[in-house]
Length: 200
Image 1 (cartoon, helix red, strand yellow):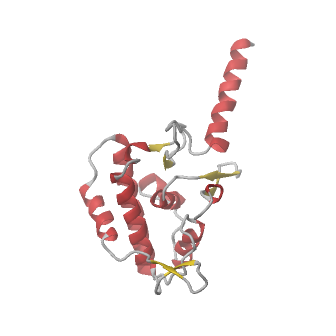
Image 2: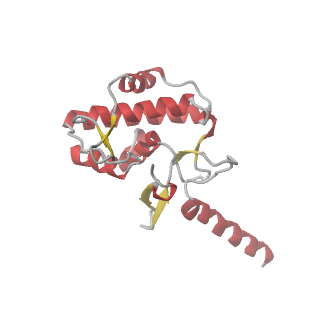
């Protein structure tokens, strides 16, 4: 099992400062690679190596050795964009877009990564997995998240200028920020400055 300390992605703020962001679910990790509409400027999935690099940074343990085609990279972008719209609708309490749900469900219906035990006793992935297996695993994770016990805890960061999405799996369920070291810290600084200005 992976340690909680190893979970999460390293992102960079607009000023270039690195911080850890743990969205709490594999499917939500895919959403940081770009997205539809205004999020397209963050696109990082251009070729098979990009999708393989994302898999290496993801919470999948161990990292699967994938044979990814250019078409599967396009499928990954399509799944991500559909998932983005479905999750945002879910967070807002809006109806899930039917066309986007169909994309997620179609991906989830395909064969996913299959875990196996290596002769050494370590965990590995069976067969020769490709990009479609990876996408099926992500889509199934989305189905589990959005229909499971934490579905009501999928949220967007409380910072007005941050659009990162996470699932709050903490016991108290009071997480507000994408990352305490980024948006949480920015909030603390703004609050302190406002308090000092009032006292001054």
